[in-house]
Image 1: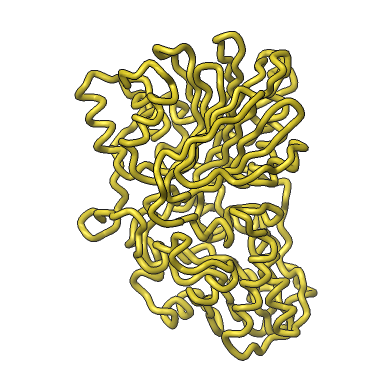
Image 2: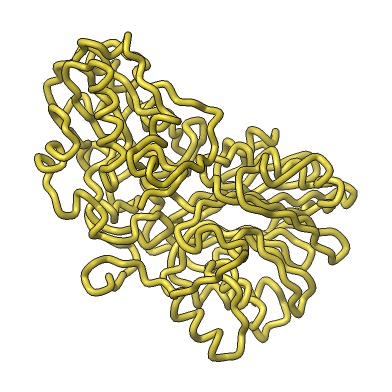
Length: 480
């Protein structure tokens, strides 16, 4: 079943994180974190939270919904602290459970700790069972709580050594910001699956998922956190430890295709330029017979610009997106008939009627929502509809934090392009090639993670019974 926030057919990624540490102990970091989280809201709309530290006290506010649903102006008087972390979440597991809302906080042997995490730990089931056998009380299904337990149970009484020890037990994708020992600690996994960058503010430092958050916070970009690196700062100085040499770079290529905002720079490469190049690569793959090029907003906009320029075909807006709609709660029967798509997207008949339309989108996962959008365009009078996708066919599940966890739900895993074209009811369907995508990004194939396209997992994965079902603990909490 599709998530209620869906109105396109793109993969969903789990969250965005921010950490701030100021050398001015009277500084209130929470308001700045809130501004930065606004720039990362595209990475998660299910929940949001901020934790702030001062004098061994952590104040926290978190809740389900968008930032504007969770926070009000008076909250920032109580979220007082010169060191803070923030989180916005789209869940791949445990959807809707308050226990999974981040940041999470706890008291441990060194004082108060708070953690926000982006990614997915592939050996979480084993770690969770070990902790329970050792007597730990687990309150959520989130990997973030496991990380906190692993740090807290270390015998080392130095926080950096304890974190280093905990990281040795983790397998998977993780970018982390945490407050411990009165310092901000930022961590990126040895493969660099998830982005994390470092910036400077007046009298302090910032770590964030994307550079666009730094821009919103008026922070100066310093550099990306390297794969396998820990950065520790109290706001006055920064220390760095390479805790493990990375075996290969494996940044998720969907950061460039879809996840990151177009105005971000990820690992030194501008997302906007990559997406225009993807459009150009798509346009070079076949002869295009179309009167206009339109994007599926918002993710297809930049790619469609590059496509239209390369093809020499006019770029138009054929689908108007209602930008003021957040989560939609409507009758399940209406949802099944696709009415949630019409709430968020509306075709412009004067643009589409009688035209041969080239539609540019970023991906097709299950195909159901794409089919509704195509039908909407046809009902608006389009003479022909040709669909161009800026990612190759998604044939394998992701185990590193994207919600494509079951192979059997992926339309391209059991159907060839012609069958998908027939299902979507389009006149033609063209996917970008792996080589074309690699060329657009400007990195060789072995420097990014393309596992969802070719099954080449950077970390060995045992796909459950051949169906590709993610190995997750069966954990459910019913709350009223």
